[in-house]
Image (cartoon, rainbow, N blue to C red; front, top):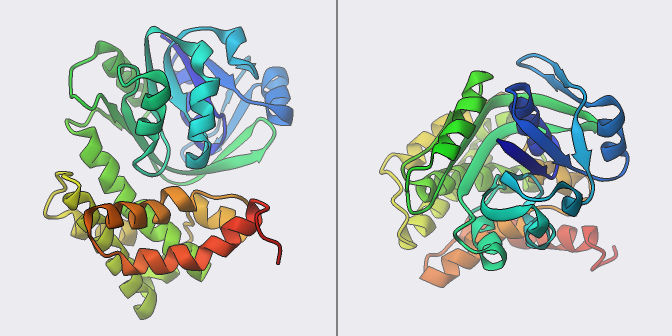
Length: 311
């Protein structure tokens, strides 16, 4: 199976590296110094689960040079998906599967508008990883997990082969029966800790242990679930409890990527996390006061990061 990783950052670099280690033909789409380092010295992954080095590693900046592949994993940030949809056209053949791994619940729809829904499956992952330097990925925490499936739930041997390649490397991977429900379950978690973390600038251990921020977290979780159910997502009755239990289980120093981006003054996924909760809540008449507060509080910082405001 030939796989293209569009966006070889913390997510794409790690999961793409694991597929290459499993023996698949993996091509990383990258740019700049990161691209040059991968081409010259391979992809170096430093992980709490064990380091590994992919060398030689295939890497290109131009998807047209790569041509059609069997699977495209999209590893860019959520706010870059619309642009990515146009850029990956040369990678798409008649049977290509595109799997977005972004935070949020809107990436598949954005890709489908450009590429057609017949090519786009649902996907998600859990990991805390980042680019530590050109050609270097650091997995710093959270047990790696990846899931994907077609929204219409039809069986596909190619997805099974992809899952098996991940599991052969010790990665928890599955094909959920209902990928939309799985996406919203993750969205409940990530939008809540990202927003509360960005407002407080505190790691998850502080968020969940201080009474006031714990209340914010719980309210944020309940709001996302209410919005999802109002949109017809079949979230289990235990979703709120399960999400909070998971938040309580992760390492206390964990921070979310959106939180780190906002703190460092970089463009973030605010519009596709807390902004999405607010927009989708308004669309179905569900109030989301905590996410609305988070979004309003962070919007000026996001505008400054994008050059829209100066202060």
